[in-house]
Length: 446
Length: 163
Image (cartoon, rainbow over all chains, first blue to last red; front, side):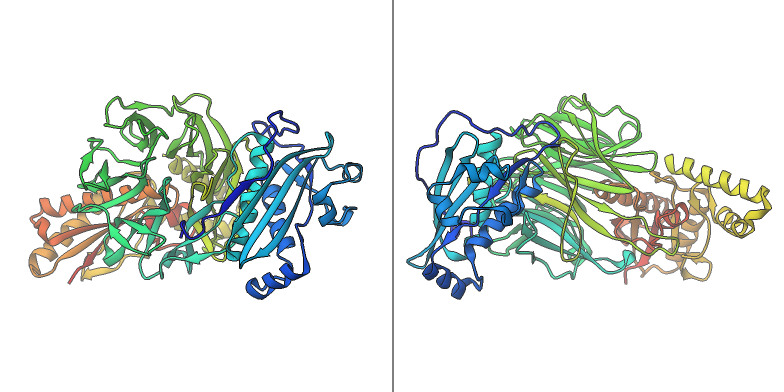
């Protein structure tokens, strides 16, 4: 699939090195940058061509809507109302009248053009600095028409990167567990969707319980826990082919799987005789290594992005706390020392932070701390929430939240939420069913 | 530990209600909860099923614990006696946790609870070949409530006939 959706990318004009507008994403985004996303212009012939194939009346507007929505939900940008735009899309793309855009307080402007050429979708777009009256970036893509949503996401990523100095996270997918039915007998299925909730697809039928899917950061493979034949085991799923296989041959329950950063190993827990220890399995030579050896529960392992360290949670101190060790299991150090219980540590793709779930005085928190345990910061508090997963640029966390039931045990729900590392911009991610255990993919294209 | 505290606080509030006769409706709840839990371990019989006459199918645990209570040991001894009398029956011990913990830790905790029950059955002469352990973590609660009593019913190991 990745191969099929290869997108050709041309740089139209060399990007000027001197930064013009800049958005600081390290602080709370209290003043999102006002910008205008002009609908991509389209000639009548191209419009008809795409309408026939894609059943979309105006694909130019559709793509610009994706860009606008992405930039808005990032919380860093404030896309202005299109009704206020004075200049027509086609003219704006040739040469914006900066006074007009300045008048509506846009600081940046995105324009572009869509063409239907040889059964292909060709999109060019430009990013303009309105105040400096300069072009900041111009790019063009050619791809199959069905990729139109991805084109919108790639444009969003390019704009984000140009304006913030960091890679975006829009051309990505989320794998999660879809939930339906009563709380005592939930039906759970693996599901996958684009980061913005589009293209939702179920990957399993719900015949067996499935939990904790996680992406391989290096490819579109997934590892997860399935109760197939009532045996809880770690599985590997190739999303492209649908092939599934059991990971390793363990005489008991394997769970809490994750990939190593290079995608070559799976790290997981194996439970036996009341103890859970952490193991790795090399996917090429199938060699299994025992990493921890302790009578306690050691689980939820996650590698550092360089693969040299592993963070996990253990109750060896008596209660669930977060630890860091070298990748061979040596040099185990406890890093969480605050009040309460700590679980689900996940190493940031940037390497500097570990996200976690904390339970304290009957409330659940999603938080981050430095890898030595210092600088603990709680981002959000709720009745129940857990399992943070990082956006590939390490700026946003996605997690799930469950509601408290009423006195009759009714009113249960599970939903996906995201929050910026700054603690701002908390939002629910809409899913067709209830949802839990989200995992964010890496960027599909770069 | 924390739930214990919450539970005690609830009791305090309820106890206060009992003093103030105005809370007459809450009186029932207080005695009800009190009668069904000891510490925060469930001692009621609402959810219990029977493998045979006088052989309850499940044992209950305190929050974050896998220690067998006196009542649990009594239940397991009855199960062991029943299993000895029925040598052709094999069992699955299904370990469960309440909803107040992270999913993965709870899977491990359920396994640890079921193993505590398994170890006890083994000391009473049941071969490990006849026992399979299966953890559901917090995935299969019997009570969908979000309160200490519901959670206490869900922290359990259930002995299920495998054949």
